Image (cartoon, rainbow, N blue to C red):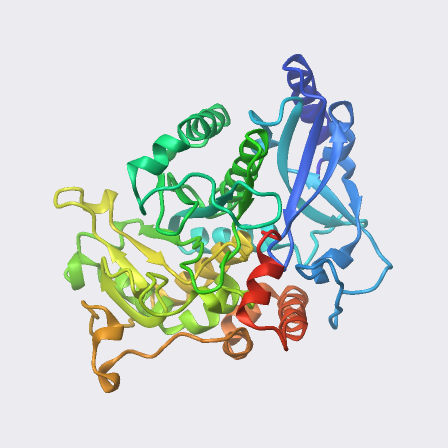
Length: 450
């Protein structure tokens, strides 16, 4: 770490920020409960934060969604400290928070070593390992959220039919402010529209590299929160806002290229996949149950991940099949390798996006050269098939998903023992937290946490 160079860069950044009226910088990371945590520094202190970091206890790796604290074999307790180093390449002036800028952080030890349980570092390492193997990944998260008009009760802001123009009109000023803020922050929005559930909206952004995709997910969600607050509205990204209703997804789209081009187009496999592309998707499909623990990591996640709600609760794949856990997207004829991608459906707003992208990168790296083949495509609603012909369900509870992840030696090795163990400890603690809770209580207790 070249501290002098970092300080010099940060001084230039701080001067530019000050000229724009920015007085403070929010430094964020996402913990194992999927909560975005923050420390902030005055703009004039950015050079010191960049060079030496801002202090934060490592115990946040075992914080739960209700701010209770568990422990793990490697992390836990009140002792020790880490340093939060802002990524100056991601420094962004926040359009919906006048006077503020934002930067994601990497976490380092006081001895100047990377923190072994840093989720963002895990994502970057997996991306770099994939690149070293000749694989380039592009990713993007969809973001769904509930917009509420009441400070406590989940009363939707804006009424009208699912996907209806009425709802868009009712929230016209809100949508305009949101899109303007994201554009000012350099976020390339591809689509914005009302979703299925009352008060639910969705936004899609352009694909980028895996770490940048996770950074963008954090920035987009906090921008949505800030714009909503300025309109007197409340936001929930929780997997389920009201028990029994369609919940909020956070699906991940991804594509892969090697030196010869796109892996999901231009080949002789299903829907023009190359052999390596089919192997990648077969590897992801086989390990979907373990990925559920990372992408759908909350007790409330399994109130969402149920059949016939387009949540993808089955371990199967299909072209444009929104009930399949792995949806293959070919795009319109003629778009070729520019459009072909896969959508991982078992991701929601409780997930840490850095863990999601890192885990997918790790599986892609394991699978690209493995010569795997996909099983038969499911081209209908799996729930409509005779019971004996239905594909396997993905885990139906968090304990089941945790068990599948714990048995995945590849993801354990990729994440490293400290991160893997802390993540499992948090998720087990949340299982215990809701051990006696019914669906309505789980939904209410998690509604405003994400």
